[in-house]
Structures are given as structure tokens and as C-alpha cells.
Image (cartoon, rainbow, N blue to C red; front, side, top):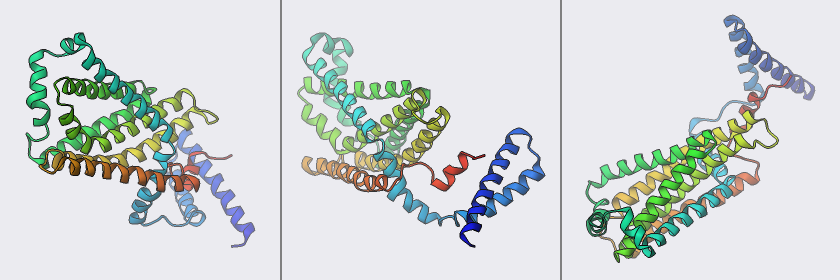
Length: 306
């Protein structure tokens, strides 16, 4: 085709796609809809080319789409991480240094049981394989909830993050008060560094989704929410993989007899690899114009032109 013919094809494709959208919404005629849909499909294959093979799509997801979506929202993650850890540390210090808090939150017998047996026993009471599946399911649910609740203006997301920080801070405070802070960090750090990072990312994504509804910026509110919602789905799938890794560490490394330095080193390695992956691949993808949303040729179909 000549350049003029290509321009005409693109223009006609946009018009027919718009007509198809209007007909579907106002008065669907099955015969006409099928005819126009077939025409649009054939035209799209010429305009945008054939779709990538499935394995290429998967590779592109992990090399471009997922890291770009996370990196583009890094400031929300950093703010969520800082605020959550600040709350946890403040509550831990409150329990340690405030007798009323120490004695009022849990009965003394439960505190002693937590320090002596319950905290450590939690990581070894079940077979490692089933424990890994249990941990992954629980953490994936927490992360998914933090993201999905963003659709409710982010308020439930704040509650999920607050509950997580309160639990971490209070347990850490009691363990420190019992003189078991070393055991606490030994059992938390191997898997917790990656696990908490994922939860903070999920929280940041949920809060950004909620904020896009409150303040959509130059986009229409529905467009902003839709774009953030699609990015949230993209991110949640990748975070599920990261949580599977942290779950395996929690089940097989955290309660193991390996030296403390080795166990914590495994956690540090997992965190550095994940953060480095997001930093390197994400920054490159964002610099190339990626945002973690749908491919441009698919996103264009969401905004018909007259």
C-alpha cells in the first residue's frame, strides 16, 4: 500500500470501530454487529499486525509491563513503606516503654506464651510444603485486598496497611520486652523483607487507584480509574509470583537450622534481586514510554474517535 492508502485505511478503521461501539451501546443488531466486528478484526490485523505469540507476551510482561507498572508508582510505594514502618516502630516502642500498654493489650500469660513458644512455633508447626502454600495464600489475599480496596477511595486499603503495621509493631514490642528481640528479627527478616515490600507495593497501588478517583488530573475520572485499575491487575499478578518466593523462604529457610547469617542473607538476596529487577527493567521501560497499561494499540480502542 502507498502512504496515502495506509492513512485512509487507518481513518476508515477508526470510523468503523466507532460505529461498532455506538451500535453495540444503543441498539444492538446481531447481524450488523457481527459484520462490523469481523471488518474491524481484519482491519486491525493489517493496521497493528498480528499478535505476539503467547510466550513472547509472558516474557514481555515480566521484562517490561510489570516492572514498568511498579516503577511508575514507586513514590506511592515509598510513602506507604515509610509510613507503615514508622507506625510499626512507634507501636513497638510504645509497648516496650509504656507499662500500661504492655499490660493492657495482652494478658501476661499470653505474652509469656508468645515469647517462649508461640512465635517460634508458628514457623515450624506444619510441614514446610503445606505451610508454604498456606503462607502464599494468606499473603496473596492481603496484597490483593490492599489493591482491590483502592476502588473504595483507598480507605479500606489504609485499614489493611494499618492492621499489618499494628500487628508487626505490637508483636515486635512484646518480643523485645521479653528479651527476645534477636529471635524476633531472626525469624522475621529472612522472608519478611521481601514479603513486606510486596505488601507495601500493593498498598501503594491501592492508594493510587483510590486517589485517581478522587483527583483524576487531566483525564476523565472514568478513564483515570480504568487505567489505574488495569495497572493494578498487571501488578497483582507479578506480586503473586514474588509472594510465592517469600512463602518458600518462610517455609524452608526461616525455620531451618542454617546459620542466622545465612538465613538473613537469603532474605537480603531475595530483596535486592527483586528491587534491582524493578529498578533496572522498570526504569528502562518507563524511559521508553511504558506505563504498565495495555498495549497502545489496544488502549486506543477504548477511546473511539468521531
